[in-house]
Image (cartoon, rainbow, N blue to C red; front, top):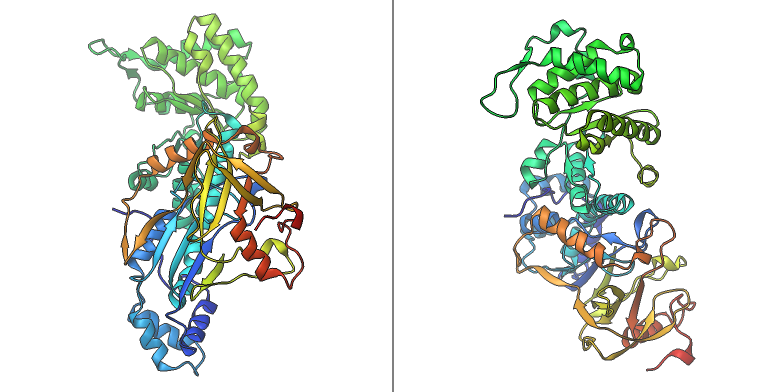
Amino acid sequence: MLQGCTVQPLLTDLYQFTMAYGYWKSSKEKATAVFELYFRESPLGGEFTIFAGLQDCLLFLSKFQLTKEDVKYLQSVLPPTTEQGFYDYLRNIDTSAVTLRAVPEGSLVFPKVALLVVEGPLAIVQLLETPLLTLVNYASLVATNAARFRLAVGPEKRLLEMGLRRAQGPDGGLSASRYSYIGGFDGTSNVLAGKLYGIPLFGSMAHSYITSFTSMSEVEVQTLKPALEGQPAVDFVSLCKEWLARVCRLLQVPQDQINSSELAAFISYAMSYPRNFIALADTYNVMRSGVPNFCAVSLALHELGYRTVGLRLDSGDLVQQSLKVRRTLRTCAAEFGVSWFSDVPIIVSNGISEKDLIDLQNQLTQVCGKPRIKLSEDREKMTLPGKKTAYRLYGPDGSPFLDLLTRDGESPPRAGEEIQCNVLSKRGECLRVRAARVETLYRVYFKHGQVSQGPCTPLEIRTHAQNSLTNLHPQHKHLQEPVPYQVAVTTKLCDLLTELTKESSPLPWQPDSSNHTA
């Protein structure tokens, strides 16, 4: 069953309906058109994009239908000269004649290579454009950003998404949780995202919890049973105080500077969740109160057979504070003979950037079977004409080295055979390459009004994304100044480009005649 963001047909730009009326008025509404969605350049200064949002696109297509209320509203906003027959047409349109091909969700995609290709009646495809862009752009941006965070910290560190309260509304918050997970994060604080998408949940405490305590007298429950069943309850409050005295002596922190209300909050939370104790250590003074209180409660839990989950920092110089906290944890671990304590996870939050982590460690392209190209003085906005197929070429080491675009109907490239192509770059160089393996990028996901492939779970998409990143050569994964990944066109597609642009200035990827073989 498809799960995702449900989008209504009216979540689009007004000009999509005015253009659709123009097609209808010219009797072109049924002409077959091909729409390709791709990035002109990869986001965030990188060299790749994680494709996300496909499930939402399929859900949108499968439910696309203008209601009577939708059409009535359009009658109130479109020009009064719009003929009634157009509204009758809108009441009856659906996606039964639409086909959607796409790369699998979670795949790496590169500039100029379409993420998805939509084919169908011209007016209907036009009406689908903006919603599909909306569903793919944000999702892919969030997933790509998450993937860059994962690359910044490596595979071992845990990345947790806790941005719901700062998100762009409830829909934006839910989508951010989902696509951060797909891009490489390990969990979220968003409970609804956990329920809907099976994302592991994570949570600790807020500053408000700690400040709600004013003294130790508010800790009403004094005892805690050890982890080993059958043993009598222990006076946990007294045990924590004993450990606090020992920790303060070791760290040379005056015990009278320790905030007792913070200690009360930690003790109360630890007795509520002895197997899942996480403390927020920066409500008052990190090194002279929060960390000593955390160490005392954690070591008391250890004495009863429990192990602390982590310590969280949410303000200040997170890098320097993390280093100081780690040194303190190692000092306590060595002094008190608790080896695991030196490796207690330190969780940092609050506006973490990619740099912070490093420091811590759309176009219509074919109508009626005739190729269309958008010519622009901005060469980056020129489209690649015609219906196309895309292939990914892999080297002997298993990593992809080139994406090849071909005209529809061309013979597919074969592994081991020489392939001649022209790179889409300013130099437009002619290449002859051999691939150890060739992958067809597009699959049919929607046809005849039906989803044609079963949906993947967020975990499956996440796994595919991580495997794709692992296979990509490290030079293309650099967070700063990555080596460009090559995208090329076949000789036949290059000929078509040349023919359609021969009256304009040469394209930046158009080859010299000396390098071109017909």
